[in-house]
Length: 126
Length: 141
Image: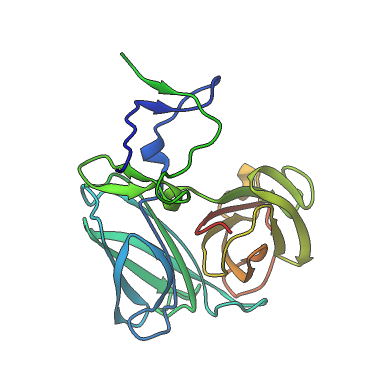
């Protein structure tokens, strides 16, 4: 039988406490923006990826967020694994509670598929 | 009464490395997957902490000045594979006079025990940055 533990806080025996749930990433992904359908290499709480065009990817979450006000952070490179690769820019924007738009650009502002894109989602689950 | 749990280690009962945890609403999430496995602040340029100096870190062994604008980061407890997710940010200067000098940062050369971050400006040229912030999610070995 599964065991369930219910507590109000988890913390050290001294010092300040923090909200454990608020500090957990609710989703993260490492994907290839150059691949068909923006292929994910590794994910958490991601059900599928989609390619909406050059530099445009969509992440669909398995467990939806409670609203569309969550925070997305990103980092990306033009090529994956290149020790002298060029940085690109990416933004992770809430589209819906279960969809995140990840748009990629070169540093000159042109839409472009990036070889390495990392994104993390912080916020409240539904 | 508020309940408080004081323990040194928490493991899953069915699977030690997987604990389901109630989210803010009715959905559940996974404790291990939501935890950042590594984070750190590094000064390569020497504007704030000193050249090639770490600030606060978690699960970082050391950093190495690899090239102009490039830092190699060594991981203390290795990741299980090379497909983890790294968020990297950087800024050229820690002084207010140069507060518009944001830089672009990304990760490469990902291995289970290390990776490289590169700080660049708009034309792709590498340049040492005073602040490099990294945040890593993925699976520990």
